[in-house]
Image (tube, rainbow, N blue to C red):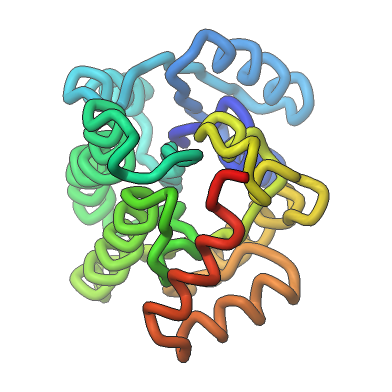
Length: 254
């Protein structure tokens, strides 16, 4: 489970642990160790913490090495790690930050999915969950790079799912709507509508829907309440320019 120190990732790890699975959780900061301690105490399963920077090949290798070190088949893989960069127009942001975003949200997913998929196909069993976003279905002005990275993850998950049909391995994409975590604050979007968590989905709800969909073998899951579902339906039919204008109302710095 990547990106599991807090937020949706931690809630997903709780779902897996509550169903009796031992868990390996990863995070970029030292708090992943505190999260592992809390998760183990609350569920009684074995939890291993791996502090790693998934923006690098070395960080991805560190995670996969932790999996292989168990000597056990990997039953469930949840690739959840991701960041955004907002609070400013694209012309005002730092290119290095956006390249870091792409490395984490896109490149690390492919790097880690490769050994995971090969391992599961060899065992003819396994479930993979990719956390994408409802932002995958719309342009995301003032988070200009984020939406395209999540669109990549969604499309990648659907393509991989098709390839793995009949192998015993299923792939599911989770598309959360806006969720009450620290995600937008860390993205520099505290001064936007997304900076207010009062109207967002509970991460426990998002995780429960994601886990249920994964275990049911669904191709994708909309993570959120009825309002999130309605938004997902609207995004399917609205023109891109309309969706971009609507998103900008919430993401433009005040």
